[in-house]
Length: 209
Ligand code: SF4
Image (cartoon, rainbow, N blue to C red):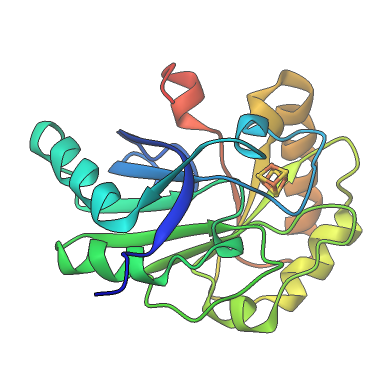
């Protein structure tokens, strides 16, 4: 029998989804190691390297155990950048266990899989995104960094389908970024950009992971 597929992961934990349209929903998070970007504002730098190699059945076992205490309907694969590894077997296993699966990605890599919810968060400097992800995104998230401009927001808004909300997420909920996000949202709406949202990180407000 072939050995089970493995993944490099940093942590598996139960919490509340703090970001995006799924905000507030109980969720089991699986954080994968590695990212192809090095954003200055990254709040999960500890996931760039390190972690441990775990086989998929063991990860699924850990998720089942967490759900006994925290019965979540959702699992979220995050990072780092989940698409840098072959996450398809894990997604299949989670769905077989009855979970809905969200994947959070920076948009630069794509692998076909049957996720229920794709969150695409293009990043500087190019804010580039694979076409397969552009058409599948359920939501688009832009971190309101020091360098984010209305021009970039407009370009990203034009690239993605209008039905996918575009969320402006202040960098680490910082006061300067909250104010900048508010100004950018006003300008974006006045410029006619549709389906725009303002989105704070709830887990940070609540002191959760
Ligand atoms: S893409 Fe995401 S995980 Fe990667 S460095 Fe940027 S913020 Fe961090």
